[in-house]
Image (tube, rainbow over all chains, first blue to last red; front, side):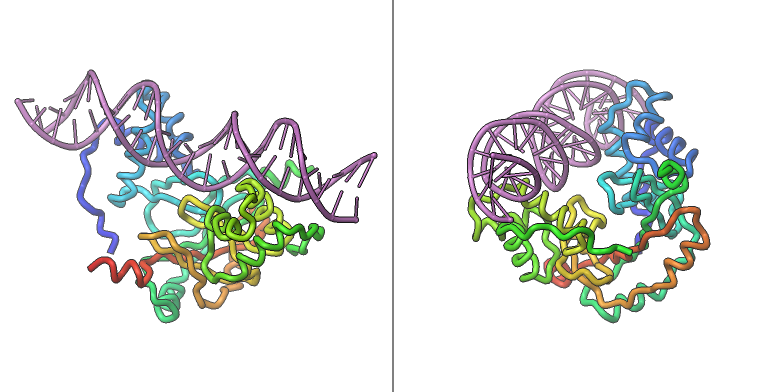
Length: 134
Length: 134
DNA sequence: CTGCATGCAAACCGTTTGCATCCCC
DNA sequence: GGGGATGCAAACGGTTTGCATGCAG
């Protein structure tokens, strides 16, 4: 399941979006990425960024992180891992907690859903925001 | 932690929102709740529903579920439990998988964040949507 | 030459907010 | 009478979409 779906054409825009996303370990939102990409492609449209992020996520090239908070975030690392979100500033980081595969097995037993996957999101206060709270 | 914060006044609107939310086991969005409440309070404003849901979540009377998908959802059951979201229709159900308390302990060890909590969200296809896929 | 991809702008949708009025203490 | 709560409508922020143009195959 989750086969890399049909390959998509690698246009300049897509290539640069992918490169910029790969550069950072943070998990930028679409408009953060838009700002990064615009430095190299000043005429790119926000719509193009959205369209391509969506497309690349569908085809498995990148990861779309839908967690709490208002904006979707994106990640060039596609292997399964968990995230932590700062409840003050909203930033999202990877967290090095081993993936619990049994959760999916348990879910299959106790639900009529056809289970596709799971995600764990921790909430907390990042060190920057801890400092700022005098 | 998570003390029920200062008690809030129980206005008619708040009472009815709470009652309607308690009636259902689904996890309605604000506007679904708005529709439900409007049958009993036709003149209530959408803003009031949003304001009060937010307030009641803060004071611990209800649970605000911020998972994937575009809308926030609300839950009258406040004890810790996990959720599953249908990737087709977006509905959210409780899932009877025991809460893994060790996750938080592990997170504390491997992160500089001050950990507040965690949530597990499963993704899958609900039985209704399975049927509809002929 | 044909069709997908792009840039641009307008539309959309969920949510928040400002403000005048209302109602409860 | 005063302060919080409400209804209403306008504003907002993030995302999506329609459309004319551009560009790669």
